[in-house]
Image 1 (cartoon, rainbow, N blue to C red):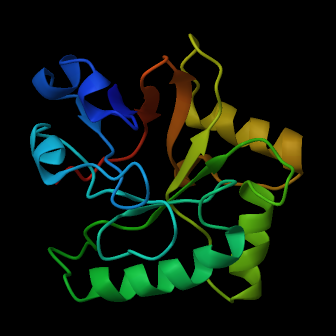
Image 2 (image 1 turned 60 degrees about the vertical axis):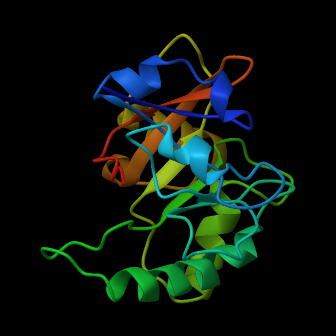
Image 3 (image 1 turned 180 degrees about the vertical axis):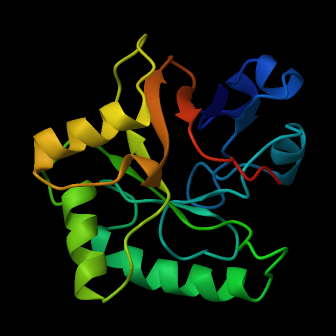
Amino acid sequence: MILMADSVSPYAIPGAFRAYSNRGVAPYSNGGYKWSAAAVSSFPRHLQGIDVNGQAPELADALDSERFDASPAEVPPWRARRAGIAGARRDHGQVPGWPKIYTSIAPGGGYGVAPIIDAIAAAGQERIRHWWIAWYIYPHIPTAIEVAAEIRGLTGRTVDAADIWGCQYASLGSYDLSVIYQPPEWV
């Protein structure tokens, strides 16, 4: 099982996320919680980063689309820019840093899975294949099938379980914890 932590305070993340090969972190690439280069490099396994405002696809391989972060309308242009950047760096037939979209499972407030699906459909883009869904049900670690079923139950939308990259299932005070179902693409 692969676990990943993220935090607005990187040094609050437990040392296990440095020591164990099945654990890594997701640093913030911009915004008020941007991690320093020293903080990022202190973790041997990390994502390229999380873009919180949709302005830095070259710095991040995940876009945070929640209230106070990038809006669902910003997802399609971010994906297009990110695909262009990643497409220029093809390696062994795979696109490094394939874009991940982080959002809440809960519908409402103009954010979440349903408005993002609508935005990418309106833009004529293919479905998202790397969802990172926030669904806080600690201590239970959900399967991707459970996450997909919950999305369908809450929103009436169908997201293929194979397209769910990860689920943030716990907020443990100083950091959040996710289970990762697909290869994490640590850098």
